[in-house]
Every structure is written in C-alpha cells, then in structure tokens.
Image (cartoon, rainbow, N blue to C red; front, side, top):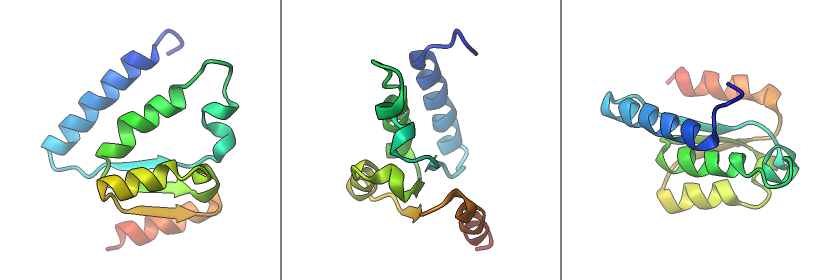
Length: 105
C-alpha cells in the first residue's frame, strides 16, 4: 500500500519469515533485477532495497540472484558469510529452468 513504510514492511516480512522457519518452510531470497534496481537507481535517499536485502537474505535458506545484481558482491558476501547456497543466473528467462531444477529434486 502507498502508505506502508519500509519499517512496517520489514517488520511484516520478519514475522512472516519467523513463522515460515517455525513451520519448517524453506525461505528462498531472490534478487531478479540488476544493479540499476537496487538503491543506486532509486530516488535520492531511498535505501529500501538495501533494507529489504538486509531483512531477507541473511535468514534465507537459498539465494537466487541475477548476476548483474551482484556486481558489488553483496549477495556473495551474505551467501559466504552465512553459508547460504546461492544460485546465480544471467537472464530472467533462465529463472524458470532454475526453479524447475530446484523443485524437481
């Protein structure tokens, strides 16, 4: 909603992810846009994408990241530091194959 603050949204997401963990549901964090979508391409002072990354990625069970969205290696650092598997892909067209491979196992 237009009047939802990033803090409200972050709190909602944290509660949702905590409930998923409690129920044994795996969390897949995904960044399917390039660097231009992250805060560098947002309006001045808007760091909501970075706040979202901080809220979701470190508690995910798997990260799906478009390669050009990880040019600064931020997702790689989270993946390595938290020992979270990360699958990178070049183009969004590839994502359906990535998901098929994941869920066929």
